[in-house]
Image: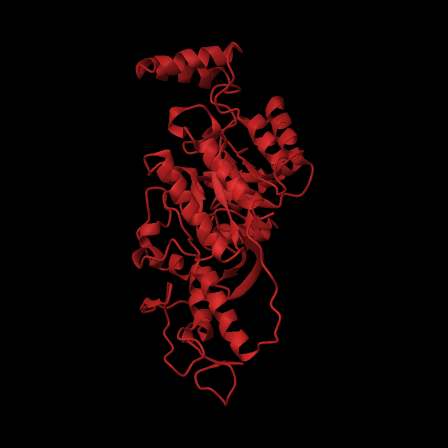
Amino acid sequence: MSYTKQHLGNEFFIKSHDILFEQGLSDLEINVQKWEDTKCFFFNGDKSAMPFDIFAASFYLLSRYEEYLPQVKDEYGRFTAEESLAFKHGFLHQPVVDIWAYKFKAALMQQFPKFEFPKREYRVKPVIDVPAPYAFKLKGVMRTMGGIVKDLFRFRFKRLYERFLVLFSLKHDPYDTFKYIINRQKHVGFKFLVCFFIGSYSTYDKGININKRSFISLIKHLADYCNVGLKASYFAINDLETLKKEKRTMEEVINTALRASRFSFSKISLPESYRNMVQLEIHQDYTMGYVNHIGFRAGSCTPFLFYDLDYEVQTPLRICPFHLMDFALLKTASLLDKKQVLTGVINEVKKVNGEFVPVFHNYTFSSSSRWKGFKELFNLILDSANAEA
């Protein structure tokens, strides 16, 4: 096989694009074209064994090349789906890198029919975000009084009534859905990842103080059943010292090395956020995805290693992209529509035997009317993996 500008003889030849031989970044002209049941870019012509340079195209998407270039960001400073090549050209809904890999496999098999390829199986890795384990409990006197005053001024009497019932232990806290989470974990053969926020209270993050004994007990209890990760605070996104402190605190609670984390607000600042994770030896990140759009931000449903474009080096940090957040499903009105949308993305992942990563929250499983039917949607995801088993 050769990967060059000109083929040498009768070998399996793929004509190369310049991007993999360049140093630094450049403003590339990208022409996205239809390719059978999908789309691709970096067209090669007829002489190449494949009509597109899938190595260069995959590198562009997986390295998040476009996120290093100037772009319009949202109010939290996040790269938005609307700015992405995938959204603009209508392939955000497909794990194109994995689809291209299967096309590459088919082309190789024609030339080398005796070659045996490793088999992949569809997997599910549910992530449960816990920005605050309770709606009303463990908030402290000042925050509780503030909440009561706010409810009064906004005429939220139903919420005020519920708050008092919870505080006087006459009702279960609506965000406390951990029994349900543990129960579902016991009935599947794969681990959930539960990411707890343990950072300081701020404008953006309003969690519970990690020094409260019952909060520590809750995290330890969950760790007996699920994998526990860190939901790093908004200010830890760019601050190594804050991230280091939060990592150390979580490790003291779970009594083992922290392996996985995701950033608050699903915000990443490339490459700083990931460089800090590499420096602190956090092995897995679950932030790569869009809050308000379902799809494949990095073009893939296969975990991959972070490549630092500035330093031109592959790092040991494993990026595990998520493909759906519960908020994105709120866009569709009926439960039936939500099921159809969810089944659609599951089927896209199943086609390439990838890893489906949905992000839900502890409050998603509450009895709130906003989240009605979401337990059913979560069960549908779990059943999609069990059906394969």
